[in-house]
Image 1 (tube, rainbow, N blue to C red):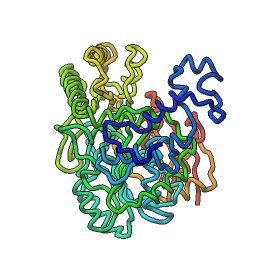
Image 2: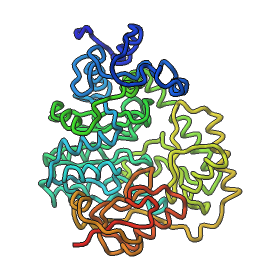
Image 3: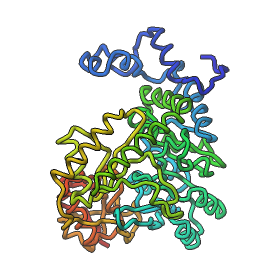
Image 4: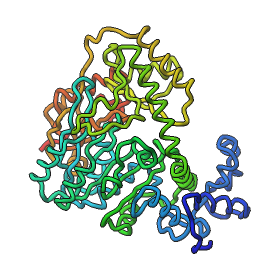
Length: 486
């Protein structure tokens, strides 16, 4: 390969190298063993010969993700430019790996990291692995919707004053529901105290490419961001970007990535990231405008049906809801007497509509420019019918909000401690040795090292009864829970 070739945002270096490789008809005496699809005809028929022919191993013409020097290096440089960052990394272990890399790049065992408790499980998993100590800042709460909001700048300032030795702060921006914190002010405050700012931007890839959207992490001055390109940027599931700027050392970050990321990176995932970056850079404004148009129409029509509340930027309060991502179609369902997860199930089982997730009081439908108007109409119609056929009094609905956890020991100490399995209700008052969470969204109800309370157990039981998918415990039936005693 000509390493002196100059690429622009109109290029997709990895994709272009794969096309050249395919054209060269190279005879494969390397892995993978399906040999361009010839080894498993059924798989080839299912995925297509073109797909299998570019599911290849690292080689000189295609570069190597562990130590990129040619086309992957060029693709990462284009990504950094597109996102307004100093450096970008292609992640093929999901945004989970990007979040964990951010934490492990800035915190070592015993270091403190400030974060909201309503983080994705990947953040607390990182604490289990590296031994950093969480300092939780309670998010705001919307009592009507029963959802956690963003982080108050005043609360963060208190946390910094009480923990001046904290190494980093992690912020969810936006949350799954579309809630944004005052990112710019949080960055300014944190940097004043020499604290790194890490942004879990899993649901905000589109913030970098459209107009009339909340500020993105790099524009706000954050040090690192985990950007889930597959969620709203169009790449294949499991592919993501990690981006950074300021005085973050890229070489060290790559070393941290290589501690856990696969040495057999999928070129299907890599090329999808490469093409998605190109597509969003060239067409992002149009894509975002179309998405906003569809989401706003759906929100207006759903609110006209009564009972449901598709919330939006009217929630903005300048603090815990500093901004709102209007591409998110978040719908409160509790007023029709149904949990969000119950409406989620009905949409899928009775109407053939798959939304992103449902929790106790809300559901989220992900809207993109790839949706069609008649599909939006179908969703609106189905919600109207569900209200008419299945709606009932709100009596007995649990209004779960945010449960402030009592952290007894660090996640790492709890996770590796000797444990005892007990029935759920028998765990009340003890310390949890494991996670319990609804997935999606993957925010732990209970994390290792936290005190198990009656409220927590009642919420877990209620979520099970309503049909939520509970994950985390060693007992996959979630009848028992592992506790630790001191």
